[in-house]
Amino acid sequence: MVEYRNSTQIVADLLSFTQESGQQGIRVTPLIVKSNLSYSRMSSFLKNLTGSELINKIEYDGKNVFVITEKGRTYLEEYKKFTSIASSFGLEL
Image (cartoon, rainbow, N blue to C red):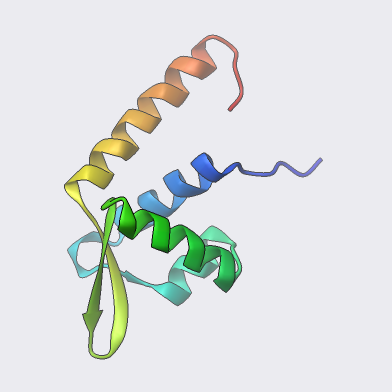
C-alpha cells in the first residue's frame, strides 16, 4: 500500500533536508530528488516556506540556494515533538 504524505509532512521533510545541508544550503535539484516532488510542487512549497520565513533563498553564483532559518529550526523541532506525542497515543498523522 502506498502511503502519501500530507503537506505538513512534506514541509517537515523539506526543512529537514535543508537543515541537513547546513549553512552552505541546498540547491533546488537535490531538494527535488530528496523530497520526490515535481518542480512545480516544489516551487509552490518553496514560495510558502520563504514567505513564512522558515527558509531563506540566497542567490549564489547565479543559482538559488536555500538555508533554514532559526524560525524553521524551531518549527521542525516542535513538529517532531508533536508527531512523537501523537504516535505515543497511537495516532497517525
